[in-house]
Image (cartoon, rainbow, N blue to C red):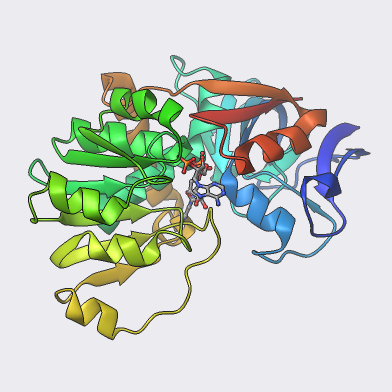
Length: 324
Ligand SMILES: NC(=O)c1ccc[n+]([C@@H]2O[C@H](COP(=O)([O-])OP(=O)(O)OC[C@H]3O[C@@H](n4cnc5c(N)ncnc54)[C@H](OP(=O)(O)O)[C@@H]3O)[C@@H](O)[C@H]2O)c1
């Protein structure tokens, strides 16, 4: 029997249930994994609340790392004992053991711990999508990153700075300013008490940004458009404050023929080969030191609800993992 954290109804953190489940044997193309660390992502709160509807009951969690316990009869490329991680959109991650399609799994490089792999596989692929594909950051790029001390925000700031961009970060409280600076932000704006659009205008001497990476959504979207120079790109990749409200396409026109996109990682990591290439480049950046693992806070799997409370209260910097 495995321990899992599931939901039987949508709602707040109180709907999370710590339960036991049978895992079963892997199918022909599947692996059975004993998970040592389960990553916590803001997206887990969307599945929990019902913002992203799912069929109930549903085991939360989209990324984890652990050891292969058994392999399906048609699996090639994995053996019992391999260390693996994965990032999916299908749930099932908050578990001590699970079965997963073998083509969703990566072998974890030997120099990466299970904890780092569980915390960063989804966030690293997301950062790759955003910086290397959605808008290709180059040395003279000026980029704004919201929530620059958060999980994905940390990677965007570090990697963008490593690629030579000028990174402007926003954070929700003064205690996160040092974190964002250490992440490579050249300028940090505390957007809970300052108009970030006015500050971006001052910092860039009116030149504004080539790209805004906005995972905050509802409360920042229109201000983010104000931070873009003509033909700049609004990359709205998340909804931490709620989904972006509908706006007229003329808002893009009047600010200078802006581009706006709402990328989702599975559409970029859409084949095994693409996922592998994205993961290889991300883990390469981690090895080179271009990206460094952020602080990782641990919670017991049975305390997953506390991890959600902490993430949603904006008290966290870096990443959270669950320990089965
Ligand atoms: N599109 C994709 O494929 C994809 C994939 C993975 C993740 N994402 C998105 O990436 C974003 C970051 O995910 P993450 O797991 O790394 O989370 P995170 O950044 O560690 O946490 C979210 C941060 O958002 C900020 N925030 C602003 N307003 C908030 C509010 N009203 N409530 C809660 N937080 C608020 C907080 O930072 P401050 O206090 O500094 O403001 C908070 O720390 C999320 O929007 C997620 O949906 C998208």
